[in-house]
Length: 370
Ligand code: PLP
Image (tube, rainbow, N blue to C red):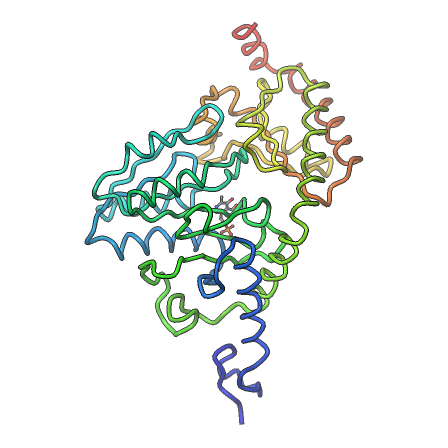
């Protein structure tokens, strides 16, 4: 006789009620919450950062529509936030997109000025996914609280990498993703402060206390929980390792390649992020060449409709198209080695020299800037 349990449903297999899945999910909720000073019941498991962002924005918008229709975000958010804002604009909401300084940081006074009686939500990312810059969360939280506005942060890049406290920063909602902290792909979480009114995003069964329907991804949840526990336990040592590697890499690039422009603040930045522009080099070409050498990197350009669009983040910090197109993002892990870093410097120096020697764009850049 098959048992029918909350976690497994009737899969034709005999599972004992009160199964191990239930306690595994409970344990993961504790592990995920502990990293950010949250209570376990404030953590809701989702399919990842994209769902968490969509849920936070549309959920607040729907729940508080009778109070106001204004949302404030920044022009450098991940598409999971920006596209959701675009969607909400089609549903009658008004969105203010805050600008950023050349360092990639918002100006708190611009935020405060943008708040109006109709403002229901402020959504500002904790760390940028391209340039790694860290926004002043405590100050944003203070402003949001003073004006009685909910504060959501997309912390996909920051969670488990740097210390974060929902209490210290007065954060009401936080998006989290598993694969940025060495957890599985396709799992994430949304932190929702107790008492925050938030409509459901997925409707159906009673999972996640009826707020997020759908059978739980138990292996993903367990993996996220373990990854969160390890990230918290090793945060300090990982940070030191990664920062040292990052600094060595940047110094190596600056020593061996002329005209390396660092994108975004170096101080207020994720320890493992490097984003540089190498004017005169097409970022996409560089990526292909690096890939052939077994080096995995990213460019700030997005290949869309056959043309290479400069990244919205690099454009927002004031990079010219020529600089933005020659951007390269290298993300370091605590698992990387000094030897790998030195090899990247060597390969990149040779590739940049070769590509620039055949580039009219570099001549153009030099004639403009020297
Ligand atoms: N937000 C940020 C800042 C990200 O960097 C990402 C993914 O890279 C996401 C949201 C989307 O997260 P996921 O891939 O888990 O859907």
